[in-house]
Length: 393
Ligand code: HEM
Image (tube, rainbow, N blue to C red; front, side, top):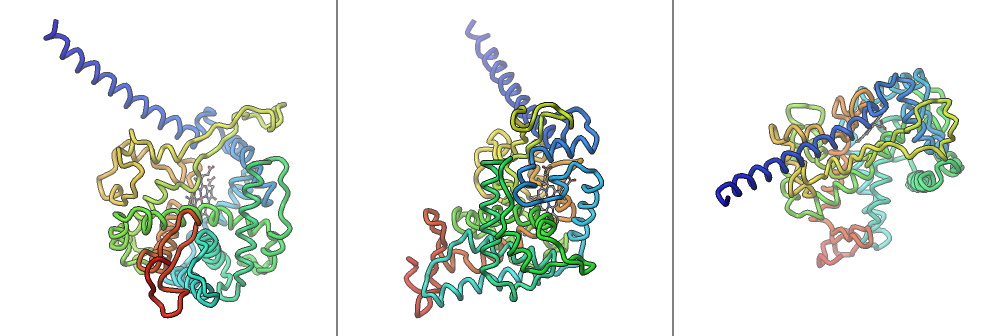
């Protein structure tokens, strides 16, 4: 009997292990089915837009957005994709974008020094820096001529509206302060027609709102929170910004962005309605809860990513290192047929890399210390007379 018990236990353990692996794979596929809309069968474009727009109606109400993420109209969706594609495929200099980010951060340090402050409010600085770079890249808004107070108002108002719309998806109203400040930037289309604020925000939000959190959290993690990651990060990104745009040279730097987008995906969940019929008698407020693809869980699940799932380790993305299941589970830009167009030419990853590296060089551990309780970076290279101080900030 004892002789038989050992192999039986081994087989049982193997079967259990296989069953667990199967369950994890099935769960990954289920999340992907929500992201790709297959959970609703094989819906046509109009139906897919409806399923997504229903869940994003709060963004339409809060910001007046009329873009691919909020429209139910296939023509409007295609027109917006064309606008996005024009922006994404336009000529740009990554050196210039780096210079805008760097210039903004240097300005922040100068303001702190003028006010004899040795701390920066990190989230505010990062939000304004990201906004300044996106405004410059998408609309040619001159960062030097844009008052900092405008950047603060726009980013604060976006944040307030975002939170309001989460709490009251059907009752949020547009912010006059946001619209007036956006209008004061006098943004025009490529044909020089003035763009009303909702149109500006429709183009701005898919970029700004997806970038600022991942940039902030990747910077804090890579340069301050996980000291083991810092040296590797500095080495991998040594050639930023000149390497960006050159697929042969930028691979290592982009792994910083890939790992940031793994741990801190811009969309933690992708929500889709479970009420497919446009003329459904049930109102959105009383209908079934939405289907959700849980990107955070896909990107952090220890059964998929291993025991160090929460560690910041860009080398996971070194050639041949990802398992087949990790490939499937990693979807920061969603999946076809509505995969983000910023994934295709690595625009999203390049933006994350350029912004995080600018932060790392200006506010990295050589120049300051992140204080997580207060959400600030304390510096010993700025703010105090006499330059480098005692390191306590
Ligand atoms: C790191 C940066 C970015 C991330 C992580 C990101 C992520 C995503 C995700 C997850 C979706 C799918 C949303 C859903 O189906 O519910 C999406 C869609 C989309 N994104 Fe992005 N995005 C980024 C930057 C951008 C930029 C820079 C643009 C345009 C200039 C853009 C334009 C769009 C558009 C138009 C769609 C809709 C695509 C479609 O429905 O076919 N995104 N993005």
